[in-house]
Image (tube, rainbow, N blue to C red; front, side, top):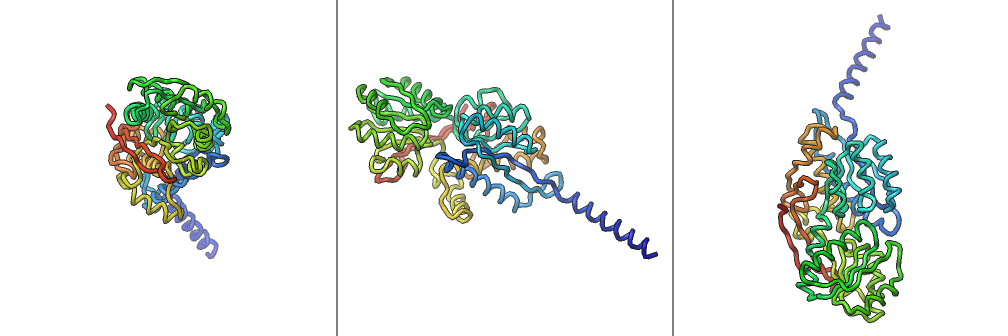
Length: 381
């Protein structure tokens, strides 16, 4: 009799465990890749923090998928800002059974990795701004920020019309990001009536630009544009000052950082940089985001954190709307997304996966700090 009673208790216990297991959804894993070591690690950390904040908030919200509470998990990998490593990392993430990708950071790693994700049918929302990323014809590619096509057009026009730079020299670091942005700036300068007097090249590992800058000095440009990272633009600005070049240095969002100011030192003032989007305090919910970010990480957010945060919520929202974390089920919802986020009142995508809202802000270093010069916001056709 005791034996039968024991069997009944065991059976009841197993049944209860089965019900509990059925009520608990499996982890929904998002893949993330960016440089988490090396000279670009501050970019990757900033992006990762924004993603983690979004996932933590989503988990507290108690979102249900298929009637079960969902737990969102970030599976992180260091791609070292290296295209070859990026492809290896992409395959590792696919093998980890992630349902979507939030990354990569650099265009040079994002583009080759995107092919791996596309073949696996995984939606990808990347920080990469190179035009080539979303021109591949993949239905799986989406952005977190305004593309370089849109940003370069604004920068080139600004230099010619606002800085009165009729003669412009351009340098890029030959990365997908740096060269892509520089190409768009060159088009915009010419369209605005300016002239490109020199086009020079370096790498994203260089720190001595004396020979390049000496060649540029002979062309007497009114402004110099650099497409590349703060690790190069900082030393470059110091060397410009040493050579007596008075033309202002203008660059993209990777120069718009505290790291640039530290590396450029006393020579930083008078540098201009464009940044996709608007200043944090002008964003749709920027101040609220900043408060929550500081409370969580005990420091101010960097440039990329709010865009990463919105990217994560875009994917989470699409999954919630579709009622499924299966990529083929929520991908259509992501493509049709229209939501208010931290960075914008209207986050939505065009047919290529580019953001429909185009926003670019120009900053200048004054007294060792970045200050806003002007903001341009428009809607893509």
